Figure 1 (spheres, rainbow, N blue to C red):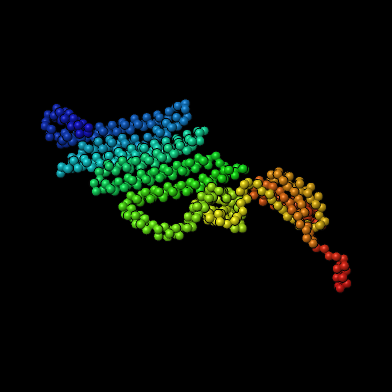
Figure 2: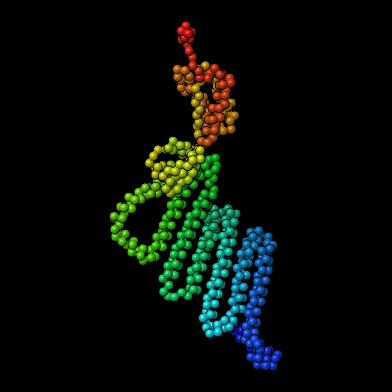
Length: 468
């Protein structure tokens, strides 16, 4: 098109030049063909400028369109903004290319116009491809954002999985497809066919693995969306969080291992190495089994914990003599957050092989106890009445149960045991401290003689006075 237009404009300009100066075409300082080339270049630049103006007006009109449907209006605005810059670059790249093409002969006095045009055509093809590729990336990002909004506003639980997965898959598939489609444009020699084939296969395997990983993560998030661990009754939520967390990590590792193995099998050297390993599979299996014994044990323990669930996320444990909560469960270890913000890291196999206390295995409810030693003169019935007002007026008590009994006695004092229930371990600890503080204050203020004390018989006192 460019050459045809240049030829037509050159012929027209040559006729006009002869009519204007009455001379031959070569009488001008600047030849007619050169003026035609300038006119063609100016025409294409003017068309590019006009296209840019029209595109800007259309994009601005679409971005400010007044549509009753809010969702459609927002989608149109985002699409228009995504199209703006790539279209401007595309128009100007095309205009500059077509404008510069007539000057290829002037830039090559040795007559290698064909090679210059081929090189410029290759550069233009690549530039055009990358611009379209950029446009596709921006559109897929907008589509991903719109699908996320749609999924957030949808009441269907499947939309929380399918719509985000479509958006993320497009954001992965578009770049990979772009690279694969760009390779033929390079016109590489035939000796590079094997390299490009391996690159294409690696990109396809990596993109498929990425899409599967995204599917696992999106599926895990959609399952956990309605499970609030911070709720008062969070036993089911913690169970699901633990199962989904461990199983998703195992699937992630399996996907990555399969992807890496598939990529390595593309190379002949690796396949030969694999065949030699299979030939000595017995010895290699024994060596690998002994070396990876702990790792395999932890992986199997992870499956057991995911299914049987002796521990769950946010469980309260007494382990290694420490009180803490399960903060994180990975494929190989468990992180327990101790009450003083320390972290205790234990292998998964520990919770299969060794005993530990789980205070929230079935329920988070707790029965707390407070022990006090008082003198035999302490009025227990009055203590029960005071304790009733202390416990039943305390917001930390869950209203299920409390009592006060004499649980032990020695030659000097008797032991009081106070029991009170709370909704969880942290609340139970605070409730015990509050009961202990207020009950001791009651004994000190109302019955100081009932505090633990040492008695001496009168005979002992008189003998001591005589000796003195």
